[in-house]
Image (cartoon, rainbow, N blue to C red; front, side, top):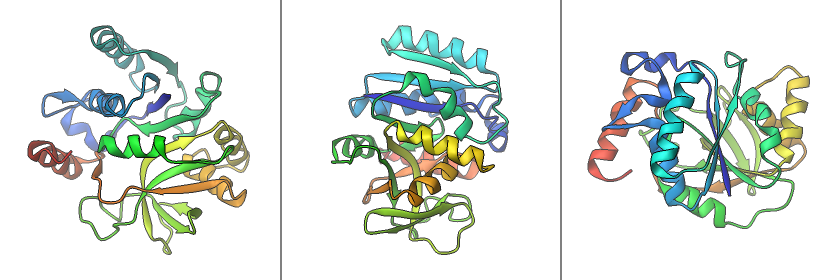
Length: 238
């Protein structure tokens, strides 16, 4: 199975740690290499990486990494990287005509999340989001994460500022190509984000959820989250 990694944004909130977010070193290893390594541990055998901000630098690094580690990697260039993250997915559409994993270059997750999501049964023409129902866990900031309202295994609503929610979006998805139709519909309505597409899928009753249980994950989006990820890596929990 292929894994699409979104790595196009500027990552300004982590600028004090490095100029190019995917290549910021955490415990001696660039973030994006850790993301790729975890997906490979779960059985992913090919990657599609969307780059944008300082993309030539990232692509050069990944070419060296891919050659060294024998990782099959396809590059997609997003020259509209200052728009919302759904634009990056649409740029990769022609490379993904079968079910695929989707994740972000700054989300460090337990490989078991990838593994279990890929092994779980899913319906054709749906998208499944791995969600964390442990919303009282201090590991991820509830004011920063994307919130999800789930019911009977389906997404009802998703967004940063929704008030009625019972889970967090981990940034890990199992997609079918219907995701691209939802992205196009959302974009036509003025929302370029992945969450916008998931809300479209929710209206179509095509958005599913997968409970990650107690498996850890961190959105390494600012210095505080970076410190939490470092401590989890040091302790062997992540």
